[in-house]
Length: 462
Image (tube, rainbow, N blue to C red; front, side, top):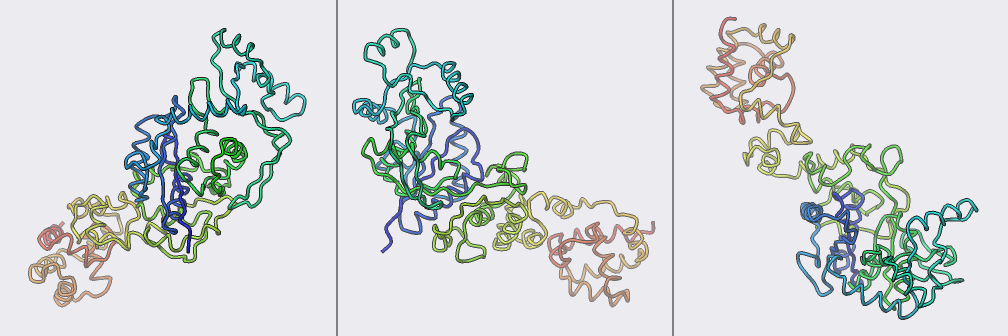
């Protein structure tokens, strides 16, 4: 029997949801659903200066658009709430007190300029910059003296010496780190808020998270977080650090590569299912290489097949999955997505000719009667057909309606034209374009009356 897995997605509301974060959310969601476990949304907003409520609201909206539904979170509640870190201050304060009482943490009164000088001296001596432990050995009297000077202290975790932190990463395998290579790190900032190292780790434990998936840029953070959890006697989750998303040049995905956030792709008109199908294959190999609806993905998700190598985001591949997604929409859904109401004729007409809504704009204009001007070659084709051809076509349309096979048969019988000599001048008169969607659904979408008027406009002598 599969043990239920509890995962979480814990974004900071300091901007839009990055594609890398969306992929992490997807993998975490799929793992929980695969095992009948729980998926938690937690908002990590202890960075007061950068966190904004509007970003939090936008993040929730983007996740809902992707249909990554969480079982516990700030809007649905749950047994381990609150699920917004800025509302968990009392929980953190009690844990800080426990660390201090155990001797596992101490107040640090060092000013930023003092710390920078220490780091420079360490680098000059060829040593990695770490906190030198200046305040670790202060006596109670010395601490009272520094507090009286008005300095607001941070709280640092006292990293034990001569120990080894070991854990098995779900992606990278066994990991070992000497504690002597870790400097005492801040768990509470001078403004009283909890640092990432602290609140991210303890919240995972307190919320019952069993498996944490995140980018491998966090791999170096894990030993520090395990030290905190061990000191507090809290359960360690299993960690898996997947390779980061990169652009075609191999560099971490950034604005210079184009769109990088879920919001940007949504605003451009990409469909959520297309984005999920592409992200599903970035750094993960499932057991089926075909388009999958979100409810189908958990069964084919393979956490043991998560990759440590960087995953290249390729918009050309996203376009492939976009086309696959469009093909699975109903005509009415395609029409609504294109902003053309729910007319199934429009959806059926354009589903194979567009990737994004902007691609439909010229054809929606054609349907409204806003035809583009003909080019030189197109004018020659229309002139060669002559007014008589279009007069005969207009008359035929009055009999056939928007039934293309019947309409074409009547025009062919009355004009003697066949093949391209028949269809090309008709297409140009009706759409102003030599290429595009099939003529039958085009004619149906334009409608017999509007089509007849367009033909009649070419039946006049120039």
